[in-house]
Length: 427
Image 1 (cartoon, rainbow, N blue to C red):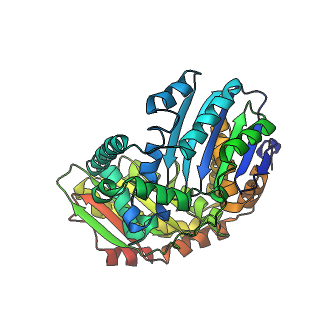
Image 2: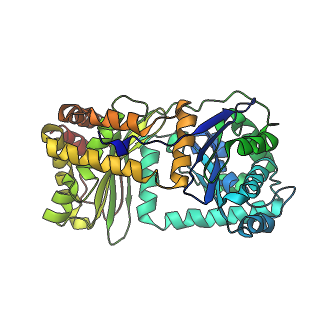
Image 3: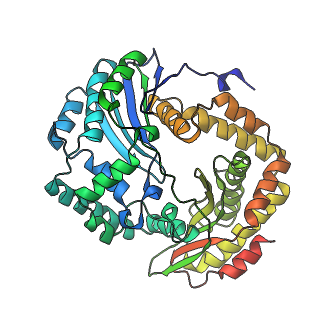
C-alpha cells in the first residue's frame, strides 16, 4: 500500500451537550473556509402526506428569517465574496457556505439563522411551491431523469425510500407552515446534525459559535425511518420518442454490508469506465448505445444496483440480450487485471473527493451521521485491497440471484418481458 493513500489530516471533533457534533479540519494551505450543517434526514424520513417536504424546506431556508430577508441572506454572504447552497438526498439534507477564513463568523451566523429562525412567509412559500412545480414539470419532460425516478419507485414500491425527492404536485401544493414546523421539530434535532468545517478554520472558535447558535436546541430522540425493502418489478412507459431509455436493476447492498466494496467493484468492472465490459461490448463493438453504465447506490439499510442506457427502439431487444450476457459472464471470469484496474480507479475516486475542503467536510459529516466515527482512507483502502477475484465474482452472483427491476420509456415494444429477463440473469 502506497503511503499517499493513507495520509490523513487532523480532524477535531466536539459534541455539544445536546448531541450536535462539530468537526473541523485545519488546512494551512487553504485561505478559504468551507463549512456546512448536515442533517441526517431526507426524503425517506417523510410520511406519505409529507412527500417532497424535505426538498421544499431546503428551498425555503433561503427565503427569509426573523432577522434577514431573502435578499439580506444573499447579500450577507456575497458581500464577503462567499457563496451558499443546499441539497436534499434520500437520507441527508445539507446547508453549506464558502467564504474567506476571516469571514467564518458571517457564514456560520447565516447558516444558524436559516436553520433556526426561518419564518416561512406565506407569500414566499407560494412562490417557492411554484418554482418546485416547474422543477417537477422539467423532470416529467426529460426522459433521462424521469426513468430513474420510475426505477426507484418500482424497486422500492410503496416506500418512502423509493419516492422521488421532489414530491408530487398534490403534496407540494398542500404544504403549509404548520406542516413544515412539525417536520422540523421531529427531524431537525441536534443528535441528527453535524456542523463540519475545513480550510482556514479554528476549532475552538467554531465550537463557541456552534454553542451560541445551536446549543439551545433541545435534545430529542431520533425517529428511525421505515426499513427499506426491495420489491423489484417493472414500469414501462411507451412514448413517441426518438430513443428508448432503459434501466435494469437488482437488489443492492447497504454501505454497512460486509460485501459492499466487492459489489461496488463488480459494478465498476461491469460498466464503470471506458474499459468496462458493457462499454466495450455495447458501445464500442456493437454500437447499440451512445453510453451505458452500471451503478450501485447504497443506503444505510438497503441498496440498489442498476444499469442504465439509451438506444433506438429497434435495438432494445439486442441491447438487453447483450447486457444480460455480459452480466452473467462477468460473474464467471472477471480477471485479476480487471480487478487491479478497478481498485486503482476506486482509490483515485476516493482521493480526488478529498482534494477540496467541500469534499472533505461532506465525507466527515456523512461518516459521523452514519457510523458515529470517522473512517480513514487507510481503512477503506485496506478493505478494497483485501478483495480477490473470487470474492468479487461471488458478489456479482449474489446480485444476479435477485428479482429484477425494469424501468423503460420511449419506443419499447420490442423490449423482452420481465420473466425472460429474469431467466437471462440465470445464464
